[in-house]
Image (cartoon, rainbow, N blue to C red; front, side):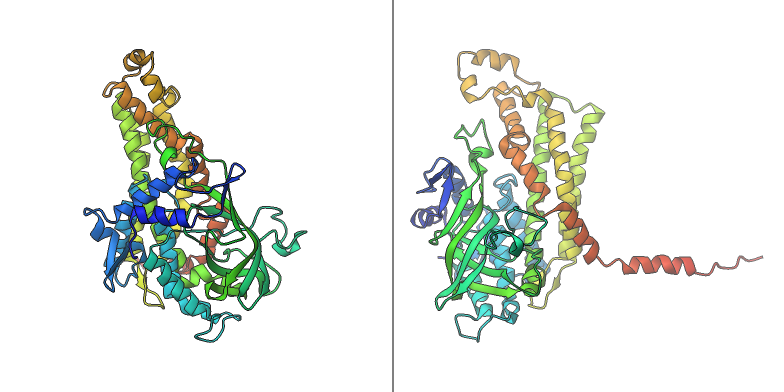
Length: 493
């Protein structure tokens, strides 16, 4: 199939509907259900984008006589990375950067893991080459399968927050967190739950170990990696309350199109066939899977490009408000917009630095530099709430008083047009812009974006600690030591 069209994506979604539950009921057809039909249509549009003559050569590449999405491309040079990054940004622009788990995010994951498939063969439970338990071969084949069918993946990393002070095995039920129950001839039986599957209307779910898995000993039932179709028997997705309220796109320009949903995933004694297993039991292998395969860096590179697109959207909305209401002459307004500009340029510079510092890894994959990506992963979650605040400060009460499309077309429409016009825009133009500002920052959708960005990469404190541990600080300490011990030149008489 290779690069899919939107119609092909929707057709597969109908035929293999994920086991989704929303508002206490099963979603029989995600393409027609009120909570999912609009995001399904938006994803279809994203798939169609790769067939648009304007973007086809950027968003796809040719290999073996087929065209595949650029995120599946194995970068061998820095030029390859730049091309992939540009494709990430074009895809992110489609949703103004609000689709945090667009398909290209997980595509980069399976690309990196597939190329580093030998890593998974080092596990204690990995079988002989050619066997169904050959985890290295399983990982490589899975990458090729997802690529060749242009599948959309979701994933879930963490355990339910039952008691953060205890390990999963110490809870009253050891299968609150998902773990291996038993091995059978057909595969592995898993039971429990995982958080947090964003975009659960995907074709498949990829389960990799959490990078903070902590258990006594070096062998754990919770150390497991596999991939499954989202309609697998016994696999359920319990979704949160939808943010798509069925309102007109003019009133809810983002939430009516891009509510990607979030779910916790329930595994009710699910059979994972052996050919779909990538890792079992090995704690060290599990905890280092993202780092040692460099999947985390390729995923972070996609995210940095997505954040560039999102920050550009913030700048466009902010400056749009300023020009609409004519507030650009005030220095405090200029200062606020300048903060967004600085954020944007920092993120763009970190993306460039990640590419310029890229190197071939042990598996022959050109891999972006870790330092700039780690800086971005720590910087953006901290600055994002300020971007939200700037939009709110610039829009002020205008983001509160926003009659909708039905109001504009109702009996008071003439008054709305007169009294809510702006210096440089009609009332309709002004209200569309301010509703976008509201949906980006203040609606349920916007509030979720704010919280999501704060924890996109994990707990901020852990992120800072991980950066501290990983960053090589020795050259700078040594430079200071040398400076302090450097003899002072003797001044001439």
